[in-house]
Length: 119
Image (cartoon, rainbow, N blue to C red):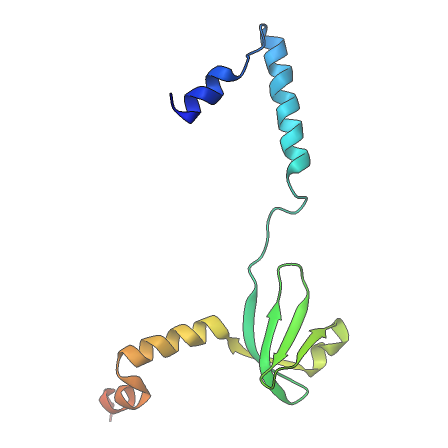
């Protein structure tokens, strides 16, 4: 007997339809109470950035918190007032993917040397 058959046969179904409906309603309420309030989350996206003249990466978490990771190893939690000092450059994931594709084609020098030039 499979696990599915065991769970479906071991569960006792209420005798009347109204009891069954009440059982389904209570089960749905329990599931709603167990579900987190905000089930939709945004993915965390990292950007190359400058913060007060220091190069690093800026990350906005799905919770809304913004962090700056300096290349020197520092980590700073950014607030709304820090937005004027933060300069976002480009997404880290897209730059890394482009770097991998360029290296597959022979690197930057190979791409520049074989590019068709218009006169």
